[in-house]
Image 1 (cartoon, rainbow, N blue to C red):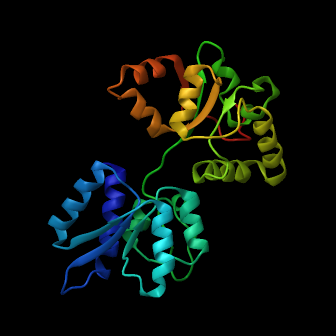
Image 2 (cartoon, rainbow, N blue to C red):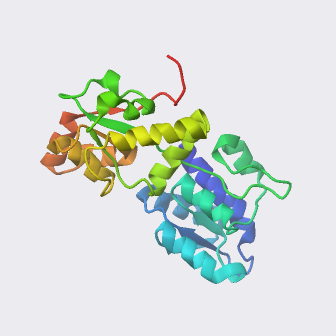
Image 3 (cartoon, rainbow, N blue to C red):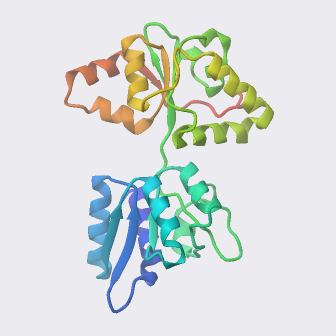
Length: 257
């Protein structure tokens, strides 16, 4: 069993006590839509006898529903797909604290909300990297092997990126701020904006395709979009991934080599 599988299983088991002993139903609001989760839900029901009543929506839809339902919400477990959204939900008071030795044993402290005497409001059970994609013909890997270099003048006019207000980028910007401090992070963001090849638009796949088409030479993407293109049945997608390079392990901002 993978760590992700174990921790999601622990999350559900920790919430099993919320399921009615009479009805044996656990209400799950999920913004995750992965086939691996289906197997986990099925195994959970087989192991506990508790049926999962799932409400599927995107993060915004789930947050809106929780706000509308208020304290009358029937949700027992909520799955969102980005740290920025988890933080926003916590700040909006949408989560109840939970104490669980299973979750605490499975998930390191840096991947969960700060604990309070009442418990922790959210736990992360899977992670993904926000990586740098570059044109292998026009860009040297050494020029893009840190996030900081995205703001370097040597990369002026080369960068494609999706909207800065999107949660994926907000999480990245938050991490940069945590490492560099607010003043340096602001200067870094201004440098990134100065290096854009075009106005931010589209999703992560659009940024990668922008590199492939020559619209830009450097992009930022979540890893699973890259995996999706590599495994695509479309020959054009596979050809695209032959052209671009990926810096999977960029050094943390401020790190020394």
